[in-house]
Length: 125
Image 1: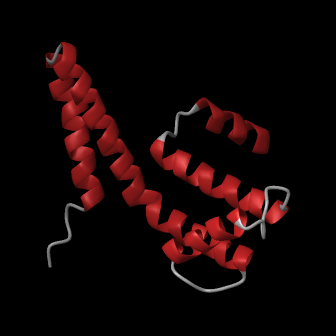
Image 2: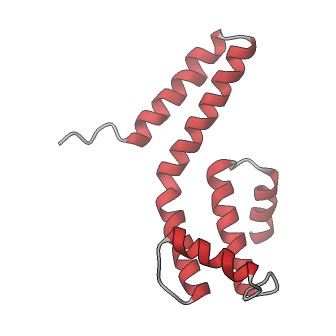
Image 3: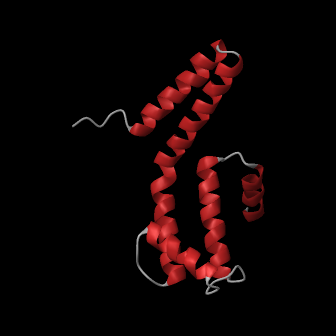
């Protein structure tokens, strides 16, 4: 069985090559695209590292909020429907907590240096 290197390690190796070897030799538009590629690989690495747990937490939150079983996709559709139909609204503390938690999880993967995330972390500390 071939289990090394992991997908995460492969993505990190390519990202490190782009950032440390390729980018210093590039200029202009090509350098910009290399930075975009390195950033995309960083997002993929964080998704590989944390995505499964983030999805599991979101699913558990949806199940608790809606009081039923289903897939992540199904329950997100049900949540949208419940909000649209007025069955749930933002004054619900459980909905507020769920939305904040999933937004934060997504930002931690997509943009971990986002200033709003830093402020939220400081607020919670």
